[in-house]
Structures are given as structure tokens and as C-alpha cells.
Length: 407
Ligand SMILES: *Cc1c(COP(=O)(O)O)cnc(C)c1O
Image 1 (cartoon, helix red, strand yellow):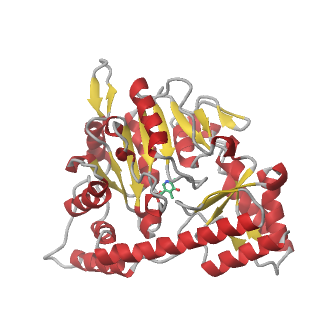
Image 2 (tube, helix red, strand yellow; image 1 turned 45 degrees about the vertical axis):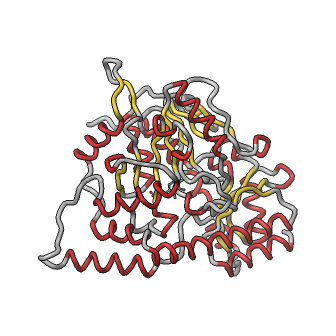
Image 3 (cartoon, protein in one colour; image 1 turned 60 degrees about the horizontal axis):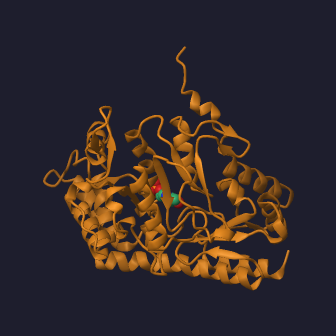
């Protein structure tokens, strides 16, 4: 019989959300009248904006008419969307990109995982801790994480982020090939300043590393934090940027995002000569991808229209108002709270050094509020807890009223 990929055996399993579901189910079964409020939702809940639906519908009709029907599109994305991205997401920041440096995709989760195909099997990987689990799991599946021992992978370089260092990761203390950064951050909701990002760009240049920058939450920034790594001098030589319409415009079920790979980002080939990752990715996309569907790309284009953006911004503001309700409510109740200003995530310290699963149980049984234990995002998440701003305002206010009452 065929031998399966042995790296899958090493995966500890999707413990976090399965374990949350198990505990919620068990509690609900024995407390059928409990009205649980979920502040652990990692998905958007508000519908697509009307201007987006209109563009989406129009494009679907074009597909049903022989005169406007389209078959395979370009595998890098339609010109209308690529140009809208370059003009709106980059030129407005003073960043110039070439047309062929942008690759439209079906989302950032796939991009941050798939892009590893461009790296050698023995490439060393650094991640912040806590971290969006996708970077870790996808590298583990590719055999780059080593073995999972107790609470961590023995080949990964973890960059600890905690209240003591203000959630600013230190640059790696050894040479690594790839560094994953996500700002505004999931799960901590915090951002880095330009100077703090510059330290990573400088490190990457000195060590020949590549930064994979996940900017999925850039549309939530309210503080003036950088929206793109390319706002940092020199980043175009060392950074790949992944963006997504999932949180920006409620596209989690519609699927569209893009990845930027500047020509200047290079790695060494087998002869020790520098090669462009952009050229490699083009080759990869040509062989393995046939593009995002035409109606979805038209829907994404509509995000950049005046009406579309106004409507998307209203939804983002709605979530960010929830974030404010959570942040201020927790502060009033005496908790130590981070994030929630530039991201729909609030990261709180558990009181009295409770471990994050104990606090999960106390919050669920005492206030009937469900969140996410920090330990699920990496060893440094222990002692912290994540709440999200994706529920309704009414439910969010109710949850905070309960928390303020004490439990
Ligand atoms: C939600 C999220 C994404 C979005 O992934 P898509 O595949 O585009 O839906 C990417 N990165 C992080 C950190 C996220 O939380």
C-alpha cells in the first residue's frame, strides 16, 4: 500500500477548536437554559455590502450571456482587479508595484501555506508566539517544523510576544530563512510601528531571510500603524505580503485575496545563483492554478468603488465598535487588556495567573461567555485569553454586562 506523508502523524490534531466545542457541548447539555454568548467567533457575521452584491450579480449574468461569457481568466488575476489593488492599496501609501508583482488568489490562508513550495525542504522557519496556527501547521505538514514536543515544534524558531515586551517580537537570535509576521496581529490584536518592522527588514537583509507578511487585518487599523510592510524602506527586497478580502469585506465565504511578490525578492538556486521568487511563483501559478472566478473578482473590485468602500467601512466600524465595548468593558472590570484598537481581537491577561483553560471554564460557567484560550495559539499564549468583535453589538454588550457583574 502507498506510504502516506509521515509529517501528518506528527500533528497534534486540531485540539483547540475541537476542545472548545466539546466543553461547550458538555456544558450546554447539563445547563440547557444557559444562554451562551460566543465571543470566540473567528469569522465575520455581517453580510456582503450591497455594492458588492450588485457587482457580483452583474458578473454572474455576464457569464450567462454568450456575448459576455468568459472562460479561463489569467492565472494571476484580471487586470481590472490587479490595477485596483495597485492603485488603492499601494499607490495611496506611496508604494509603487509592477503589474506582475500582484497575484490574485482564493485567500490568504492558501497563500501563506502554498508559498512555502518556493523554499527548500530544509528551510528554517520563525514564527511569533502566540501565532495564527496556519503558519505552523502548514510548515509541519511540509516537514519543516520537526517534532512536536510537549507544547512546541523543535525545529521552529519561536519569537515570544507577551505583556513584558509589549507584544513586540524580538528578531530571531539565530539565522533563519523565513519569518512569518502578521500585523495587525491575530490573536493579540496588536500592531508594530515602522521602526519595529524595520528591525525585521534589516535582520532579513543581513541574514538573507524572507519575511512573509500577513496583512489580513490592515483595513481595521485606526491608529496610523503601517498598513503594508512595503511602507518600510528596503522591504521590497525581502518581503512577500499576503492580503485578504475575508475580514475587510466579509469574503470568508466568497474567497478572494492576493499576494505581492516583488521582483527584488530572491533566493539561491542549486548553483548558488540568486533567482526571483516572483518568476518561480508565476511558474507555479501557471501549472497549479487557473485563477479566481470572474464574478468573485468583480465583487472584489467593487470593494474599491466609492460606494463599496463606504459600505465595507461601515461594517468594519461596526466590528471595531464591538471591540471598543469589549476593551473598555474589560478594563472597567479590572482586567489587563491588549489589542482591540487596530484589529477585531482583544487579548486579555487571565486574572490571578489562571491558566487559559481554567479561565475559559470560569467565564463559560460564571458568565456564559465563550472565548478562546490563549494556550491554543502557542506556548506564550498561556495565561492569556482572546475575545473577538464579530458578534452583534447587542450580544457583545450583554456579554460585557455579565462580565462586569463578576463571576
Ligand atoms: C482570517 C485570517 C486570514 C484570512 O484567510 P483567508 O484564507 O483569506 O480567508 C489570514 N490570516 C489571518 C491571520 C487570519 O486571521
